[in-house]
Image 1 (cartoon, rainbow, N blue to C red):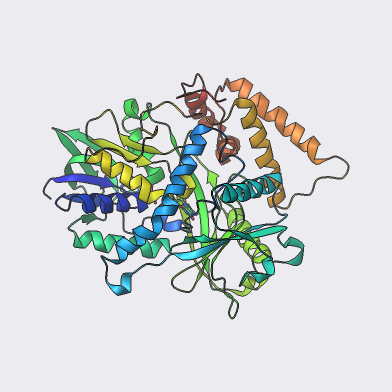
Image 2: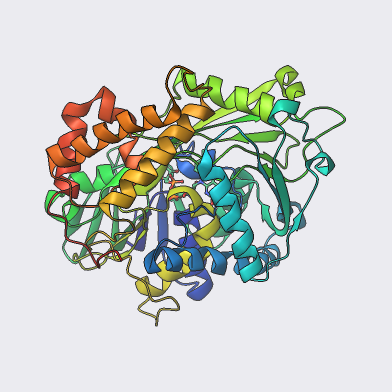
Length: 485
Ligand SMILES: Cc1cc2nc3c(=O)[nH]c(=O)nc-3n(C[C@H](O)[C@H](O)[C@H](O)COP(=O)(O)OP(=O)(O)OC[C@H]3O[C@@H](n4cnc5c(N)ncnc54)[C@H](O)[C@@H]3O)c2cc1C
């Protein structure tokens, strides 16, 4: 194959949207998008594609200035999506036209911990502060939603201008459009990349090579595998953990289908329980989030059981009788500090776009624009601190991190059916966990406020021999971009 101007390694939403932005700006660019057709393990293919700006709010969303800025990016994306869809629809045949299914119901039930109430309160105050339309409602008015009575919501609201897309259909339409624009899709896994003269070679599984002047790594959580072959570079970039998520497509309940997103606030270490109606008439049920050391492509049995049980008990018991149409496992790219990686590396012409964690689909128009502007050397619309080679961005102190971890741990216990023993108390359990996590911090000398998700990482218990050395490398003697106030 001839040399292209840009090879994009990764065919998820960020690879596609960046190619879309670039070809909008310069139709003459020669671009190759590399990635397996089945997108196995990819986050985008498993995602619910909630365009969740407000629905994602937690009590930690505005914890400091950097966290505020990250929310503002989501808010920017929220304002942009209608015009992104309008623009796309003007370019594709009628059969491919997309529509945002507007409307999100956020329900807060008693299944999680205090974090859920705190997040709901933060959500309401943000909606008020930003004058975003919303209304507290009676949950019995939500179509298709009929939880077991003992799990009925304590509070519920509707956000009429926050909606969802069908992620797989959306990506397929963007891909067709890009093909029409001459973008080449190479349905192979990249084994690695190296500098080659003044450009790059990307080696493919079928032994072929793609030559390009510039190269963008946008392979989601798998970007870390590609970087690991270049340790000098990888060591300067916040590590990417896979946030493994399981989701399922079920048949809708006949005669009483869910019509809009229904979701809880984000829950312990995860994105909360949610259902999203799909364009093929099925119902998406999501999603778990467990951090591992390496991407996973199969779900844990217990997680499958847990998610289906949550859907049946907290959304609609009639789902028990629905056929399970499809299951998916995706790996969210979670950076060590929870902020994205966007921009050029110290290797001229090598770019990274990843680390989008749980709302990368929603933020993709903003991130893709940032990336396209940088690749084309244009003035940036967004000033950001997310250059890939950077020190970690702190959000919480060690003390705050311990508190958040404990809040999430107790919430996780309740979500998984825990009952505090009557001969003791919830506080006693919390105290034991606190002693353990303090010892963990002190023994290993971590001096960074580590996120609850990383502290809850599956492999800290099951594979400490590998997990601890990595965490020590990342979080001891940490250089940070700023201090936490
Ligand atoms: C279960 C789940 C639910 C989610 N729900 C939402 C949601 O509702 N809203 C939202 O905004 N976000 C959601 N997210 C998060 C969102 O999906 C991610 O932030 C986003 O999709 C990341 O996109 P990406 O393109 O960076 O990565 P990916 O989608 O992971 O894409 C990377 C692609 O690279 C390919 N690839 C991997 N290795 C290689 C290689 N070596 N060579 C070439 N290609 C390779 C993969 O096949 C994959 O297709 C969810 C994620 C999960 C897992």
